[in-house]
Length: 486
Image (cartoon, rainbow, N blue to C red; front, side, top):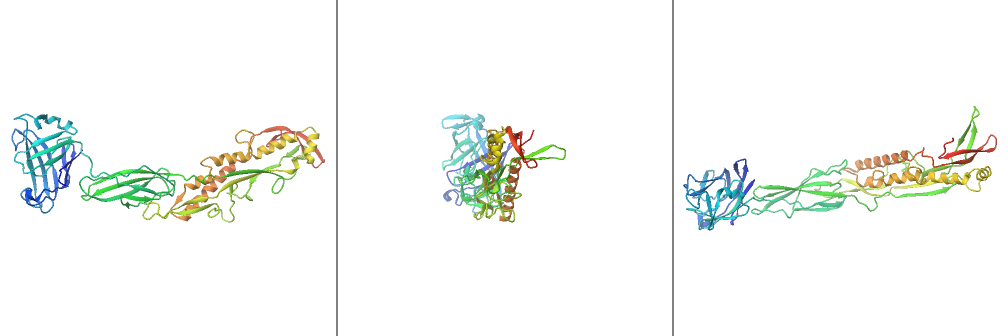
């Protein structure tokens, strides 16, 4: 426990209890020159502070308080402490309620000395015998107090747990969007007796700092402006002009930017035309006489150009080197001189999107020869055509039954939303950020491409015809979509 004793004149004297010992702190005490002819300066307690009853110096009718100090300053009242570099024990004697009674006078009442450690904020007036009105410290084991000395020799003691001095208050918790500016405010930090010398802020990474850490910088000032790229733990250390310090921690939560940071998904259907499959369900006779059929009549493709490995899902599809920097996302740079992320690169914006086109072969549309012949032979060309559209599109009302459905669902997940994943990326250099961003896009693209590939579950079973070129006939057979022949 820290014991602090302060007078109504400037100054404090601090003692720290270690076990049953009291280890002295430092203080700067001043008394009017009219009392000593000079002024006290810095003194240091030597580790002796205690009560005794009865006191060996003052006799059995008093409470004895002893404070050991050594002189470390100049202009010391030599009549009180002695010259610089010396040490001396100062003893004050306080009258008890009566000879041999372990009580202290409290106005007209009495307080048992053993109760001192139990008191919270009792005002006790102690009558000092032969006092020269020096400003000194008193206390009891387990209790701290504030002491006021008067010229009459009456000392006012307020017992209770001592407060820290100085006290750091880092404010917060703080919340800011990524790459936004937040002001950390330590102005509510307090010091009761000495001016504050400094405010120092340091930073540690939060749990969401994925692959990036803040610089090991120290920012100074009551308030500092920080541009964070991930959440931080900010530690404020304050120091008064006697070198006493205190620290406090504030959390800086970085929240994702939301506007423009969801990957758009769009789809459309196209019957025939460019890139659509050609032909109709077809069959051929194998050497062993068996008949093999083919059902390539639908295709789900990127609607922003010819796909390439690593860019099967995402738009735009890059040309040349597989990078989307400048054509899919833009890079920003933090300008926060002295800050923990000053000069770091981050993804400032993104135009990545997913666009799908569901292509259907013109040869199976109503009015085609295949459609007319299938209908004439008792097949179900309309059911088959509807199943093809569902298979290439949003499925048949069950999960994972349509190509576009799977792509859309995966891109809505946090780990599959490319823009959302790019939003949180940062790196010390632009090249480092570009590598991270391109690798993340490629990884997500490949995963969604794999998940949305055939085979998918069957969603329709019925009879259609296969055109057999060798015999120039339409052969009726039962099939399932996506196309497994029984």
